Length: 166
Image (cartoon, rainbow, N blue to C red):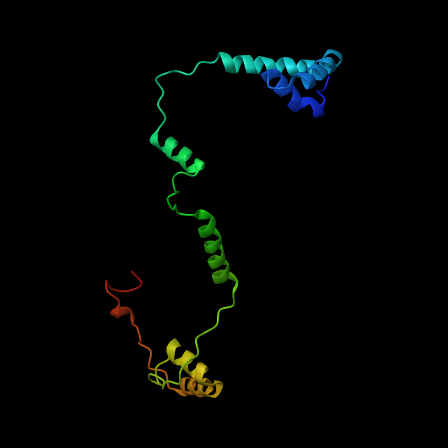
């Protein structure tokens, strides 16, 4: 009991009483012989009766926003510019993509004299490596050849609170 797909629209028009007389008679003849179309027409007629019988409450007032949207839809009122997320979201996605996936290049180091050749700091090592590998090698060799300062000697009496054996 399926409705004939070619007749759905015409059956809806027939249920609303909006179909011309000749097509309406031909369709009624078809409905008399087709159980699916007959059931579909009965459903549509019931819906149409329910819609006609429904009465809207008289105390309902539409909001001013509703009227503004209707006037805009009719072309009488220009639409106010809104924040357009359709443009913002792709732009943000592009920025995230660029930040995450593009290769990062280190800034070109300007030739600068080392701050203090005797200080073993990361800055000195980076600056030497940016200038040339020979300068880095020289700095590392100097650091390796320096004498280490004497380490402090700890004795049991030098700890606060007495002996370690306690």
